[in-house]
Image (cartoon, one colour):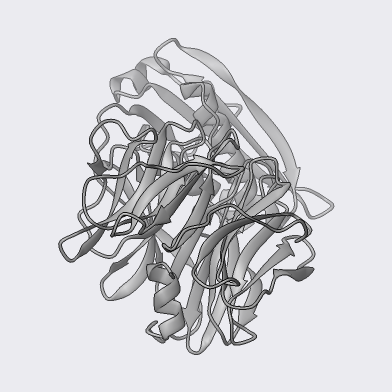
Length: 422
């Protein structure tokens, strides 16, 4: 069996679109508990061709944990802000900084963070970066603020991978977590589906139809070096990395129906781990590597199951609804995200990964696909359709804050969130 996206790609029903353009971020919804924070315009940031303060504001707002307060004037790291004035603006935290071009062409990006309620400095940083790394510098400032104020690591400097369809070309791209700065990893006239990051963030596995059949490749992100690791008879699809990066689970039809197999990262040591007359596909490892979640129609309709990663008895996890696919497990192993068909709508749901509790609908859209957790487990990225286009969205786990990563000229799909570190 092919999942919804695989089927769509194979059937060639994707919409044709012109060339690629950058994303922009739109926020909707209001979180229940948010830290009111002001991010002032950085001194001289306009000379760098990047609005550092705007990138930091958008990152923090998209997390759902912060409410942005207007900061009407430039504020740099040398300022001594009037805390009583900022408290009067109902601000709990304040950040400002500067961007200065150095003699060697790099930019010195500095900032400082203040706790307005306590009236104290919370720290800051100074980093000299190339112009090409200014956006990354801004994301790292947002990560710093996120961790200082919440105690949890931010994910703004991580990366995502996704596939675009423009005209007759499919393109696998790697971009910042806000969808900006996309770099081309692979161009093809044939569909590319199911990208999956290696746990160290150095490789992507994906399925390409460039040889007129589904073949699994792995590719080094930095060098672009790639090779086919699963090119067996029949279909080769749905690669998933184990948490230690040493094993890949995948779906093969080499012996007839679609079944689950595992192999080492070199493409050797192939071993079948399901042996049923059903369609078993879309494997996803639990964070501890002990369990493998997957989709099977062995009960009469597609549902999420789980089994020991080495193989063995499977237990059904989803029971609500007759069509539940695309399992993704949160980094702490507690939450299952998946796509459920309700009537004619395919919507993003979450539930307890052990199968207890009631499912929670995070969306009210009708064509959701491909959920993937951020490495801190605070956000989920997914694909959906809006305004007649395929777009990417992020949502908080309560569904209250959604950010649309909008392409103005290309359809985007198959998002997957990379690990920490780059």
